Structure formats: structure tokens, C-alpha cells
Amino acid sequence: MNYYETLYIVHSALEAGRLKDIVLTVEKFLKDNGGEVVATEIWGKKKLGYFIDKQKYGTYILLQFKSDGMKNNNFNVEMEHNPSILSYMTVKIEEAGIREQTEDLDTQIAGKEAKTSRAPRVEEKSVVEVAEEKSPEVEEASTEEVAVEEAPAEEVVAEETPVEEVVAEETPVEETKEETVAEDAPAEAEVAAEEKVEE
Amino acid sequence: MAFISNRKVCVFCENNKIAIDYKEYKYLRKFLTETGKIIPGHVTGVCAKHQRRLTNAVKRARNIALFPYAIDPRKA
Image (cartoon, rainbow over all chains, first blue to last red):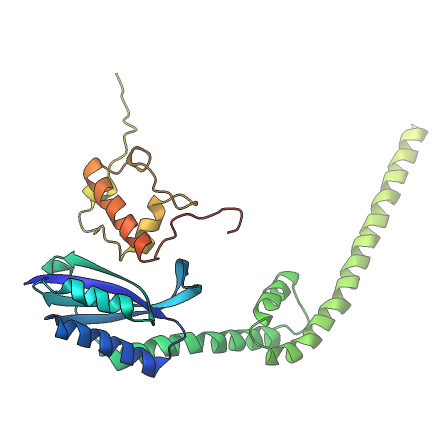
């Protein structure tokens, strides 16, 4: 008996329940062809290195199994004919390369989903905090960060607009300061020039 | 005569805990150029034995779309 592993890419549009169905059907293919599942690891949705079937993203799943290798070709044929599997690759591995499966399928799938859904919420919170922190002194650098973060959270945009107005009000003040400085400088220069002329 | 060696030492020979595996594609990324080509061993200092394993790992990673075969720097 040898150890093998198959890394396959499932269509990214499949949700949690259907993803589990695919994983179970693949394991069933394997058992039909005399394999024994050792570990399954869901890597989650990733950007593909190149387009496969016009898809930009895919869910990577690693399946490690034990088999005598005689019917691996049949297993590969069944993977090839499954329309929801974009791509797959079976390679032989050493026994040392076996990964221990710590979590079962449901928790792995749920974990990946929670991560993807959490991401925008965190951004919203951070935007609100930034907006609250800025009371009188608004720096230009921080406003740029807000502008970048605005895109995903539409609700927050309404809250932020007053902040931008504050910025708009403040910026002219700075400009006027600069102008006064600029006016002072030539005046001094003129004085210096006059002194030189007197000498 | 003072002689300072500039010879690079293979990272995989120095630290044998680093496994050359296509699944560690994030680590392998530093042996590729920005256009996705494999950098030759005499540039990175990787020895011939490990360079052979490295190229096999990169080619496997390309096959399963963990790496692109080529990156157009004008579009990226």
C-alpha cells in the first residue's frame, strides 16, 4: 500500500452544503476504487494562478489517502468527468508527508466561511472608530486611509461625510497660513535687498 | 593573503527542516521572478540537488494553478 494525495479545485460558487456533498462524493469515488481516506484538508477559496473554465477563484481541497495504486487511474477519470471540479492533481507522497486531520469537515467548512464573512465587518468597525477619533485635528494622511476603506461599507459613508467637510474647512486655513508665510518671505527678501543697496 | 568568500550557501542545505514541497507555494514564490520564471540556482545559491527538487515543486504548483505559468508585468 502506498500513500497518495489529490489536490483538487472545486467551483467557488458552491456553498457550504454543496461543498460538503462534493467532498463526500469524491471520497466515495475513492472508496469504490479501493482507496482509504487518511486526511481531508480544506484550504478555502483562493485566487487561481490562471483562469480555468473562465473561473478566477476556486476552493482548494487536499485529500490524502492510502491505496495500492492499481485503480488510481479510474479515480482520476471520475474526477475528470465531474463538472464541479475545475482541476485536480494526484501525486505519490511519503508516509512522513501525511498531515493529521484535527478538525472534521463541518468545522473546517464553517471556519472558512466565518473568516470570509467576518472580514467586511471588521473594516466597518475600524472606519467608525477612525471617524470618532477625528474631532478637531484631522490629518490628511488619515483621511486618505478612510477613503480607501470607504468602498466596501456603504452605510458608513453617510457618517463620514461631515468629517470630510471638516477637512474641507480646515484645509483653506492651512493654505492661508502658507500664503502669509509666503508673503512674509518676499518682504524680508526686499528688506535685505534694500539693505544691500544702502551699503 | 586575506580572502573573503562571496560564495552563497544553499538555504536548503543549511536548514534541512525546510521541505521543498509544492504545497508550500508561498515560500517557493521567492525563487521565481516577477514574470513567474524559475530563477537559476547560480543566482539564488541553491545547490544542484535542491534546485532539481525545487523546479519539480514549482512545476507541480503551476499545474494545479497555485502559480501562473507566466505573468505579464504590464497587466499586473
